[in-house]
Length: 122
Image (cartoon, rainbow, N blue to C red):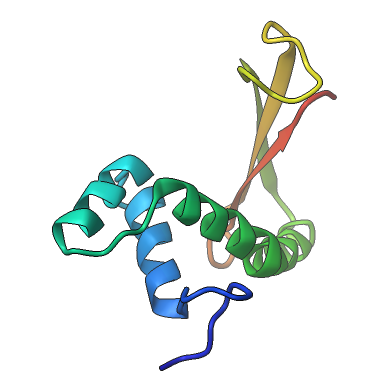
């Protein structure tokens, strides 16, 4: 069995990759993945999957994001767009507070790099 990627759990790299891919590439929400696993006889709650996704993002994907950002800022041309949004139930913030998402993308030189950056304020 491959080593666990989440401390003291049965999360393998392949199951975490599967869950993340289903959620973000295939658009399959965690509650539907939970039902899918139940049909297979696997008791895997959406809260557990959410914890795995957050842990994986913080532990490994943040390294990839930072490296992509380093490459993006080296490019001669970069595009950016700012979008405002409201995030409900964000700790310590009013539900009507304005948050920001910035999208950054490289120009046509080299492989495309696309990054999203969420910030609660400017």
